[in-house]
Length: 220
Image (cartoon, rainbow, N blue to C red; front, side, top):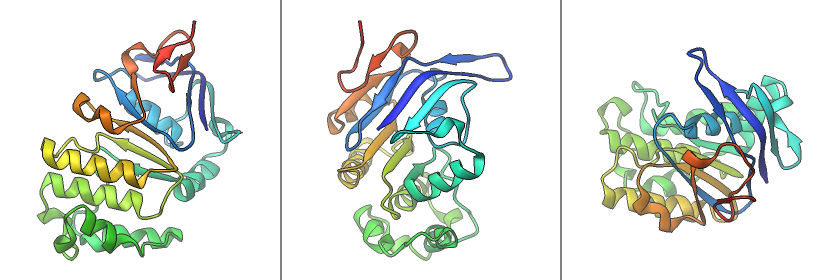
């Protein structure tokens, strides 16, 4: 379980984000909806240990990860989290295969890469350099790289942002299927995809009081 307790984050421009308490249950998929600036991506980055909250706790499976050292956070992310970044984080001069297999340097088994590339319809791009791919193809490579290590937690920041609806729907189907038995938290602006998720959270309302993510409502 991922628990967000009393979390607040303030940025240099003095923008402050205060979150209601949220609990994400193991084995469920969550869709985060909300306007730009409401804190969706920031929440993912704090769960992943890329950012640290200024106040509050982020507890994952009983351990307060917000209090862990950066080295511990980085190791946890490598071993337990698959992160699909909005800006892909791919190396343009490397091939698709090399962008995935670079994870081997961190001890990740990438043997499922071909299977996942096939499922997402880009197997024929395996040996192409990333710089020659379309935005949608890069998106799918980023998804494969996140899924290939069979992580316990999958964080997805706009995983369909560069895809048309038909392909995006296919990608979300594959993503939610791959996440069965795992915790999936995805940020998206496309409400039409909500039917593929167990729970939908309106992040515009996640401030001030405890919030039950399973029920999708504030706790009175």
